[in-house]
Image 1 (cartoon, rainbow, N blue to C red):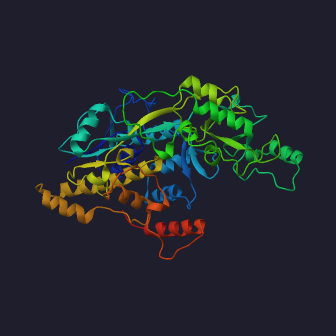
Image 2: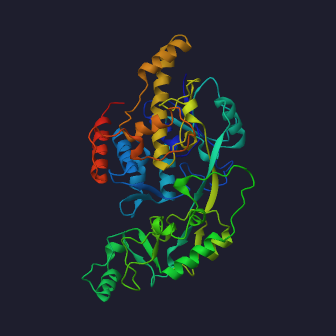
Image 3: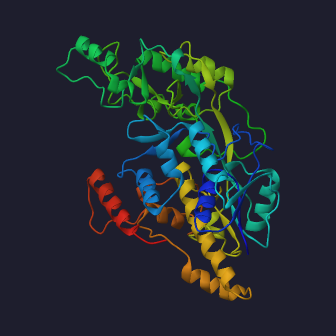
Length: 468
């Protein structure tokens, strides 16, 4: 064998290709854009991110933050690129999505070991090592081949993206900058002093968040209009499952009048600049690009019709004259029944030549997709080397060699726990984000959550010290 094929130029595919290339192996990376676009994509660059510009928390006491640090220490390629184009976002890693895609595309296309081929792949080669990283919107023809390959009906749920507004259209007489808790008025501070301090606080302006407070009347009117607004009908599919981690705000609101106030609109840690008191609810807008002229509405993933988004979201105090740079959209997210098909290296149990990576495996989230591409990429190299060391291909020998040499990460790390989650048989398999619940418990129980997560992080980073 002289090369490895990677199908799909998203986060997982690009990470896999870069890992393979730096081990001196040639890669052909197939990406169907710009020949063909999925319903959710519009940028011809590789590694386009759609739903949000946030890679979530950087804190080690957060599972996704820990996963990012694991990848940094293991030599992951995409997280350092994300770090290099980060924009203010408090304790989270948020990126300028266009600059991120540009930098990843540049890293891949300028790599001498990677050939990028812009065409749609409708079949799966049988005589090559292949990583299928086609993401949540795999084309119909390739989807049929994957169904044949896995022997299972394809599973899917619906994912959604939040709208983006232009900063200049936000009423800053109502809105205010600041991270949660950091801008809350102290009990011994007068409202006049607090307003004066906040109006002149450059640190708050660099927080990456704009906050929009609501009183009870404004909140209840907004919720009423939200739950009665028109949504886009999803004609193509009968089964309309929604992923909890990306729940459309209109569906969330229908669960009860206070659901949003205990979710994405929770007011804890804020002071309303109009009253000097904690608001009834707060909408947060997070900076979406380096220039700071675009902000996405945090937690506002939606399937409302575009006209309804303009009408309903303009009811939010401060967004009465909002200009929408991009409206929210819902799209299908496809995944295979990985526990039946894959092992903990994302390699098919019954077809060693084929690996899967990304959200199609049931890992949910940007960093999780990158992690799966990392694991699939380094293990595809292991298999490639085994093939090239053998004079004759013998499935029994290949299987034995691969089992002894494949790189499996400890379940006490987040990267290993995710690999384990998608490969251990279970009923009602559903996509999974990075979270501490999938890691083994500590030997000694610790009641304090922050301390417990800290100890889990320490254990993980100790386990991650391996040579690959």
